Image (tube, rainbow, N blue to C red; front, side, top):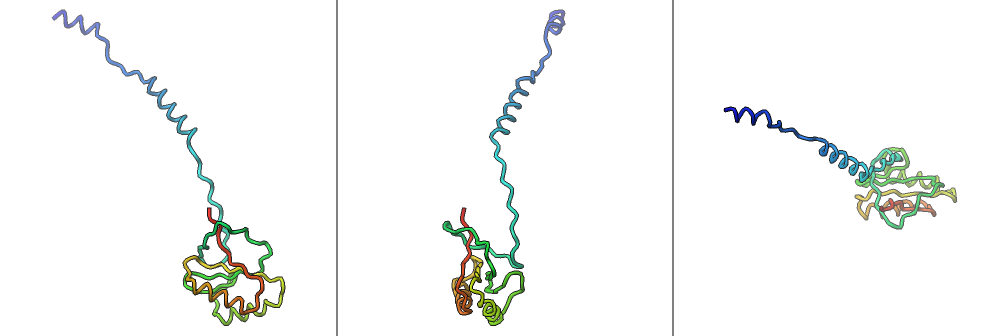
Length: 144
């Protein structure tokens, strides 16, 4: 019995040394901070029309001209809009384009939704051309 009491006195209580653990955690934190990439801020989308359209993408697209006089929008359902106005009937749009076609410097940008059918885009192009518009741009978005 005396032997067990002596053994208890000499026995050290178990301890856990956390210093190496803290060092490893700090190293992991430093590694994480050094290898982290930050997301670029999302650019603010310029609201040009009252409708939401997704432009088609092209790798050869150029930047938009600053001398734009008129924007014509074609949504996925085939509705035509001019700038911030409500949807216009085809005849009213053609009359409006005819009124503005007297200006030789007039540039019309057609911004068609990528979900619009090929036929709808061709009809819109034909409508603009039939109004004697000489400068017509089909606007697409530059692909990444």
